[in-house]
Amino acid sequence: MKCQKCDKLATFHITDLSGDQLLALHLCAECVKEYLQPEETPPASTKVVSNVISKQLKLEQTTEELAELDHKECPVCGISFYEFRQGGRLGCPNDYVFFANELEPLLNNVHGSVEHVGKKPMRGPHDTQPQTELIKLRREMKEAVDLEDYELASELRDRIKSVEGESQP
Amino acid sequence: MIFDEMACRCGEWLRGSGPESDIVMSSRIRLARNLAEYPFIRRCNDFDRANIEVSVRERLEQSGDFDDFTFISVAELDNLDRQLLVERQLISRELSDAEGARAVAIDEAERISLMINEEDHLRLQVMKSGLDLDEAWQQINAVDDNVEQQLNYAFHPDLGYLTACPTNVGTGMRVSVMLHLPALVIAGQIDKVFNSLQKINLTVRGLYGEGSQAMGDFYQISNQVTLGKSEESLVEHVGSIVPSVISYERKARDVLIKDGNHDLFDQVSRAYGLLQNAQQISSEETMHLLSKVRMGINLGLIGDLEIPEVNKLFIQTQPAHLQKLRGGLPDSANRNRARASYLHRHLKRPKFGEDPAESN
Ligand SMILES: [Zn+2]
Ligand SMILES: [Zn+2]
Image (tube, rainbow over all chains, first blue to last red):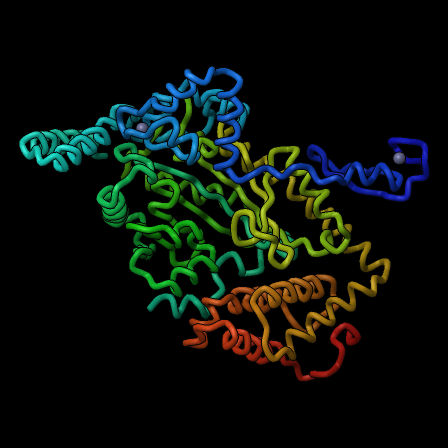
């Protein structure tokens, strides 16, 4: 039998899984080497995230724009874009809204889509953006306590209580 | 203590039954979920973490839907008990090694585990013995429905379930199948298979975690994409490719047998002999040899041992399990001797001394 890639004698007979079916391959000793060359293995998810982001950023931003973007902070949880870029993990649900423009190419790259088509919660809101208010209030309360502004802290505590009451399932 | 009982049992994924269980060890689905009212884990302070653990636990316990679950505060466990849960795949290494408030709820059959304060606030996981993804999806979907009655999940109308890492957003779902592929390894075809799987957006990992070298020829195949596909189609995607890998492994086994591969017969017999007679043995070597023996049973080369028994040995020779069963043994040299005597006791046969491969 002849090699499928050149005309030499095929000494290797491999079964390949491409797509959903088994594929028989007949290759010579030289072509099989090339074929079996291990491809780059995909790095762990953190690396995927930071690699894709840095590639995307280098393509689209100037250095100044990049520095500015790095300082951009989510008003709810306080995470900076730099922190996300480094760690590969977001800080709160609001980041998906606040960093939407920066995340879109990343999501496209990883998932090939930016639209959820699966399950939705049966009960309760299908957009929990309003609930992120609680995250912000708790953070502000902690800051007030740290600054020993107890008046503001207790005001915030009351607001947290009332928002919590509303959002209880 | 429940952990001592646990160590004696096998748990769901090592039951060694279910469809295709000679090659498929287990099917697993996990869903990543977060609470709408808290920052993601990396921005949580100690207070947030404690609040999440307590409120999730309270609400689930009060609902009545989780009566057969045991809630365990992982932060309060010692190293040994945490390691035991990792070995049983009931918690991830990440949850075990993290700091601060964190917990797990486990159902009686050890099929379902709910991790609290892992990378996401909640990780719901179901495990089934053998290839059983549809059933696994139905079970975890029902659990998710019950949890959702009690808690507000962070959800975005376009992006679905919001997760700490953007690689999990959307369905938050990871569908995994753990396969035993020793013949493909012997035939030198395993990398080829993996490269092909990666081309169609599937990830392959060794047993026990990310990046680790495959222990005992066990490999886990799972989906990479979580957004833009429905849960059913993700189940379908992974489920449709597994039969190809299974038939590939079967072909490799057939070829090895048909060729009268003496290397193979030799490897199986040696492995069995070593496990029966070693005076001290590490858990890695045990895993490696048990893998060969497991294949030998499936190929009919070993007739006096059953798969469930081998599966039991797989789990009970892990360091934490061995320590639980034997007590003490903090240092590995002692453990290696205890492991060898444990194996000797469980594998000793009346026809001891006879080559098991010949008796067939
Ligand atoms: Zn060629
Ligand atoms: Zn945020």
